[in-house]
Image (cartoon, rainbow, N blue to C red; front, top):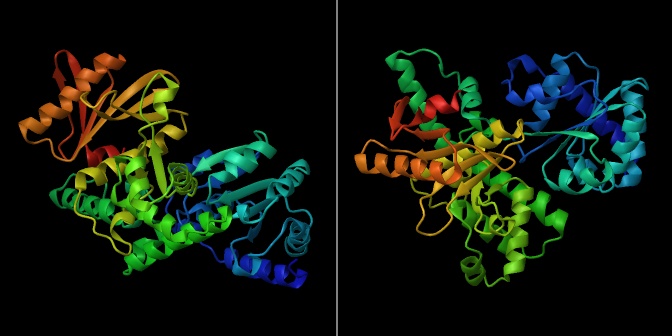
Length: 425
């Protein structure tokens, strides 16, 4: 157990720190509109470490002038906190914030086993709870089991390109030659360096990303799942990062790492739960076919360059595809849409993203960095037209580093978007 005075000291320091925050200086995030302040549901923000979850919660609470208590459970002095310490934590919160406090923000709550019982108790006493976590298990396991729908899930990713431009004061409106050049430069920097908020003002981006990777692998995976072979986990992580946007070849990876297929899939699942990678399933109306041939994407393209032993090449087309997928996840989550890729056979034409509402295909999205050459243009548009017939969908989108326009081929319209224009929508 942790001594009362230690918990009180930590909370007092955190209270003093939060009172000096100036949210008006922070970048607005689209996810701010997803909070339900008067709801009886726990507001749960999940996402990869350092994506800005804590900042987001502080910002919305302060801007709505809500008096709230704050406890960051990721503090090193709280690392050994147990379920029996949580009542002491609540007592210390009352001492610092008063017994009439109605909003409590618990940061990185998944670090404490049995936390869900504590949150459930607070919800029953009509206290509004804000919770953050860096592991999907927060929802898929404990939360969904023990709160049974009593939570509002908000997923947060690193900065979108639009938010990146706001942070770096890039003009996204003017149509002057200078402004367009600045946007193109910002776009290339974004797809290469990534959008982790804290990293934007740092010169040593490699050191930052490496420390982030180490923290995720050790705290969110190794400690949580009692993994002994951390080196194998690191090798799997680096292999997936180096092969982003590709189908995971479990057999090949198992042979290279001398690891069973079952263990390998378990480790990949851990990486997904920690939000380092996002898996994209294959489109099929048959459930058996949807669970094989998954592709792995990175939560942020900055992971490719800014880490130890990186041999990443330009691969701008893949980086753009990765950025588009994460942006689709942002946009589709609020409408409860699902995303797949389409390739029914090795010889069939492939579509990068199929956006669905349940079993209805609503949009086909193809991504290509360069479509200026006729051969590349024909390849991408013919794939859209063919799959449009296969899946009975006429909402066709082609995203490229090319001017935005609308074309018509064989009576079907294809919306071609400049990658910059589409990301800034």
